[in-house]
Length: 101
Ligand SMILES: [Zn+2]
Image 1 (cartoon, rainbow, N blue to C red):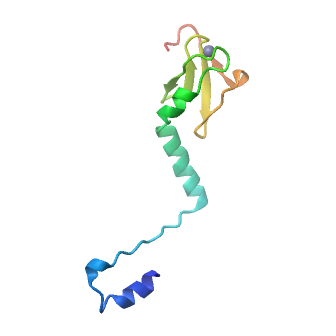
Image 2: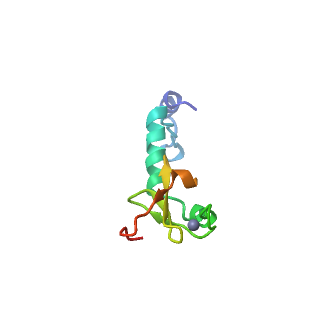
Image 3: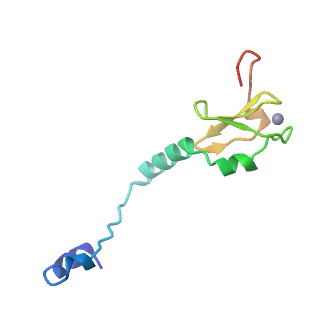
């Protein structure tokens, strides 16, 4: 039932019985922006368990602020772009000795 039809029924219907589900249409650009932000904020911990370092197959540590996945053994930081981890050695940042991990 459309919202305008439901409003017509209000005169005779018990108010308790009516629930209106309004669908909100979000602009696709805005939707992508929201999803991107959510992905960045809430990197799925299960995904972290699946992801391993492509070089040593060791575990990775997620650095939220830097949006990077760190391999401590290789001292490499794999970037997360648009919420998607880029697990390529050539894309990874080599962590300098002075940077704490
Ligand atoms: Zn590694």
